Length: 219
Length: 219
Image 1: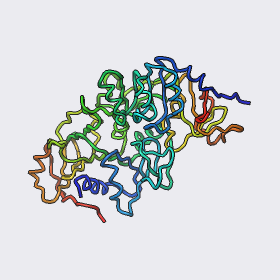
Image 2 (image 1 turned 135 degrees about the vertical axis):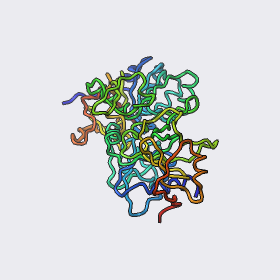
Image 3 (image 1 turned 180 degrees about the horizontal axis):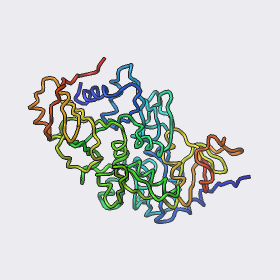
Image 4 (image 1 turned 90 degrees about the horizontal axis):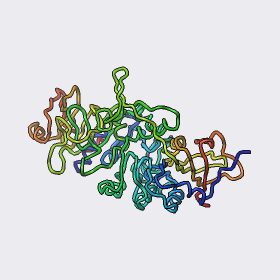
């Protein structure tokens, strides 16, 4: 018998403190756990650092956290679809660190895979290389990009079981399986919970061992 | 046809049957409509799939393109996570990327992600794409809205990647970039070399196979 990793919304809310670092899944909001975003809003936590691909739209995904003034720093590859992020950055109310998308996902993967960093040619000759170590092998120059981790990762899964095994739907997979590796506490929002059995092991995309707790979208 | 339509129609001729292609947002997304029926390509969407297609009827849950808009998939499509998506991009598995530009120079440098003090949307996946795709084609209008040249001897805006652009297609001309030189391959009908030179911010070499740019679709 495997332990049921269910957590109540009440208990989950108390995990979000001021200043916590959160990795979030999603690409333009597709694949971001909306119920967990609302729990973070309810928790009152502020000065958050959020790490993910983009800041979606003002009324979508993590855009809601930004609109509510809860975020101190965004680490992302793109903020162009959310004018509020750009405006708050210009007004000095929000710190934004931009990272090339492929580098961002590999840094998170390193953070969760026990690697000290990754060597990538992306960013060579651009302002991305400022302050970073460069290494050449076989006449190709690479940037040394360091691992990235967070306190909490918030994941959206379409299917899951009580052991925390997860699978994702279509384009909602994106960063979700990667961030599930790289946080001290990993919580999944499961849209369709398989209550009385387990996912077919061949279909599991994120093993339950990585997942500390889950809620369902409906409950 | 508008200048943008002409650029898209000309760019479609760059794609070969069987190519794996990533198209940037904006103008490049118009290119597939100009493909001849005997050319079948596979489009990659950097949010995590191969086999991007146009929206077919009503939106499908969790199926969006890299701009966050509802889209379709073609037969044989495959979904994956962002680490796989960028392994495909950096690992040389994308035959061609076609993307827009703010500036391109004779050294093959591209600037398309930031106008300091004005527009800072972030690089998204562009730096990885330009670094990793086997062939990089920039499509853009020849001059900026104020008439200033966008093809330069040296980009003044922050770079997306160093020396990676192979070809530039505008409504007026097609240039290749070789050994830090622009080579004029095609010129629009009824346009003189002199007036092209006036609209271009770098000197160029005229190919001995210089041809007239074909206008419109190839059908």
